[in-house]
View 1 (cartoon, rainbow, N blue to C red):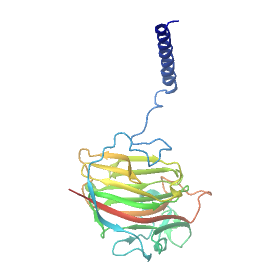
View 2: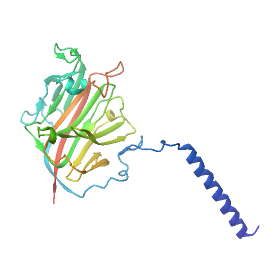
View 3: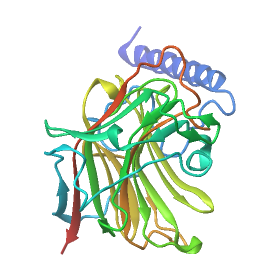
View 4: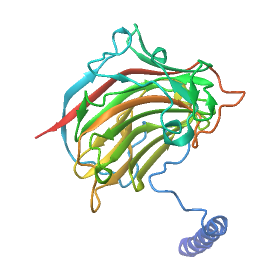
Length: 295
């Protein structure tokens, strides 16, 4: 067989094999199989991978504006932080099981804030009866608040069914129309490898992002961040963007926000702890830093 004929045969065989491959893929991907939720990265993607397609951050020069190192011992600085006490209204609106107390939100004298959750009856009453857990929460309401900026915290969060660690921002404005919040990190303990960030208004969730890691978040420290600008909110893990919400009509994220760190137990989203949940569960916060954009 001449070279030209061999080339033609090879080409035909190659085309046939390609057609068979395309057909097999089409059969394997039934309607709905290929649908990917907005901002979702496939399980196993590491934070060191390049940014997912579609995330184009504004070019901003960031300058450090505020920092918290938690280098003391005992209660966090009262000039900066309020320590929550109680179970809120109906378990902070979503049937949380813990009673926040001062002893569960302390600096460890080694450079970290530690929020500790444990099963403990302290004689207090929660929405469901005698409180069965205690935990910690702090916020900077009335003390520290900022507007647009880069918000980051280096933390190690616990995992386990029924645990809900979070670092989030809530608007200073008190009117319903102006209310909004940015969840820099929220994760639930029964999904130990998933990082999540959200944006909310009183009308509900308007932005969401998530990233799956190869190991549990509790395996080590990560830097969780959100870049909040007039045009977008971009969530990051260890400096890498993984989700973004672009400005839309009636953009509500325009007013200053204060900071909240908490370790919730139970509630409508994470559910109740089970026999495998390990206590005491601790959320370690190494530091928090806020940057402002400069020209």
